[in-house]
Image (cartoon, rainbow, N blue to C red):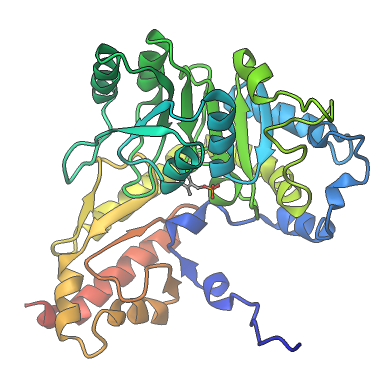
Length: 382
Ligand SMILES: *Cc1c(COP(=O)(O)O)cnc(C)c1O
């Protein structure tokens, strides 16, 4: 057979400033691009494997996992294929079909799917109303106490540390304390935080934590991190009966090549950037304040921002779309002319974006470009 042309390049995204929050934290530093090349062959991580991926001495996956565990303050760390696989593994090992898991109303769809695939009953802790959509630990407590009063047992409490809709940072420590006081294990989903900001699982009463390499840890992925405290290690990392050395929930081995090589190569860079989280946050706060100078532009979610993912409501840009000959596409096209991408084509009523990892000059340029577009079409918004 013959194939069609797959056109495997993404020059547009690589040569422009990309504001897509999903992609900001997954950009590789140069040393990781080199690792990607070195480990591009299939099973390339397995040259010196004696049967256990997590114990491979060269490259030193064994030492890497122990450093990774210290980085997030857990007793055991494993790589998985993504945050979702980590959540699935925890639920699968810990819960039985029909069990109840409690999670926040801003939970990622993959938390729902992990629960559904394990036949779990999901109870949601609602967020506050618009425009904050805040997840309040007190509401967790109310929901859990309510379930307790009704005699319903809860097997697991899950919290989204930073959600992907509003970029709200939640009080993990408080929710962890509430869970522990009720004797329920606590899983923290750090897909949008691990690798961006410091994570302290023990301090926050976290039993299980997951992160996403391709989302926030400068890895090509797909790769995730699963952290487990000692108390749960025998359960979550239990061995196969038939293949005594293999860890069952990991299906023996997880990441088997370039994904883990890039995560390892990026690790020193991650340690450094996590320490500079306040600098990133300052850039985000500056960006929000500049954007809100544009008529009717409003940051939604908790204020002031505690994370780089920002959701804006932009009715002004939407009114322009009504009259503009290019309709909703004008915004994407005007941004693209200025070498900015990452806002979905056709979207003008609201959008999510992030300036994570850009220089202060680039952030200024991006904010200025939005201002310029707003004033260029000002009369269309009337
Ligand atoms: C992106 C995201 C995920 C999914 O991460 P994967 O590593 O791709 O599984 C899960 N949860 C949240 C909150 C996310 O933002």
